[in-house]
Image (cartoon, rainbow, N blue to C red; front, side, top):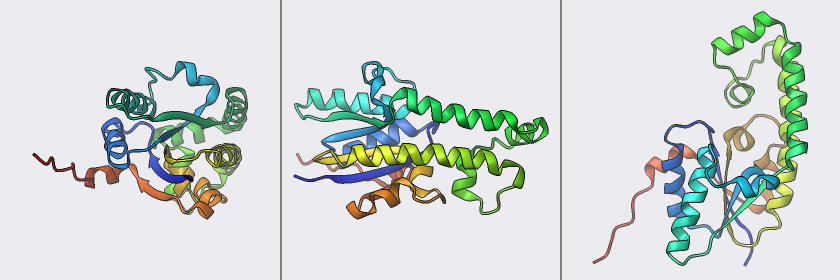
Length: 198
């Protein structure tokens, strides 16, 4: 067996994310579900508040009941390294002038939004975007390395910016030699339920 990789671009706070992800898991029937979480958090995964974690746990339970093995594999940086990257981003964010920060909050701005949808980046937020991208590149490199060690059909739900973002190399580009299948989470709405044969 070799790695068969499916990347699902998600928005972490999608209200329908849990159901959509469960639909993908049911459709793809993976051997492994990779999660964008530090492995240090594995003991605390059950009851996680992000829908990716909750859906992975629920699917794992269903597969146990169905006598089918599926393994959950955290693939992000170790927690302390991940937190260091986030702290660097927050340092830059706190150096922005208050008026700019207020404007970003009013627009519900996130760095991911600019990397996914905007080609013109306001000069005053370029330092923040640069710090954010540097942090994501570290995460992408680590995740790419971890995924390459998996042997079997693997589904990774991950923030859409890691797959479709305009920075380079993003996670998809790092894994392109493996020809991963790529989806937006919203595509779950097009998946047809299997027809039961009686």
